[in-house]
Length: 73
Image (cartoon, rainbow, N blue to C red; front, side, top):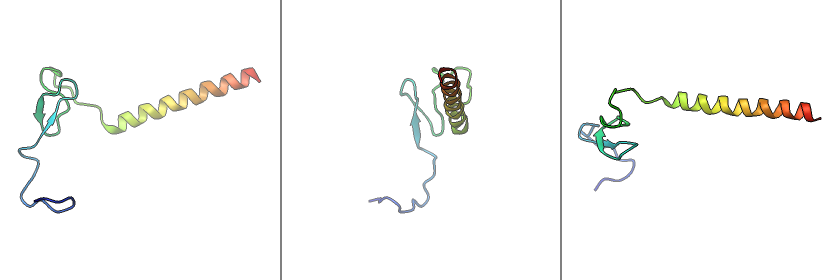
């Protein structure tokens, strides 16, 4: 029986699989979408791109709020 935190000797990512984020089909490990949902084979955005997008959105909201408060007051 395998417990959490115990090393898995000889087991790598080979033979493991993920699920497509759109349809749920089985895809190879590390893939985000299947061939049907991503026919062009475009890579998924990195976590850094997601964080940068959220950061820029927060900055834009803060800037709009500051302008609104300056014009109001």
